[in-house]
Image (cartoon, rainbow, N blue to C red):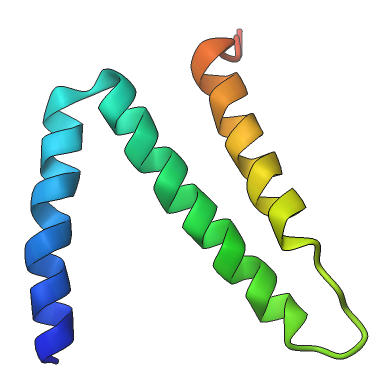
Length: 77
């Protein structure tokens, strides 16, 4: 429990600061969060013997998709 409290005391100001600054700091935060999430997602499937996930490909693909959405955008109309 102590570790969770300490990590939240570090993470919350970073997230709030990036949200307030917006722009590239917020993009960097989103890239880090989504990269870590993709890595963890790949590890879930990597635990099975018959499934091999190229983790670096998964993480890079997620980062490229986020960057494409950020810089190019998607027109939904």
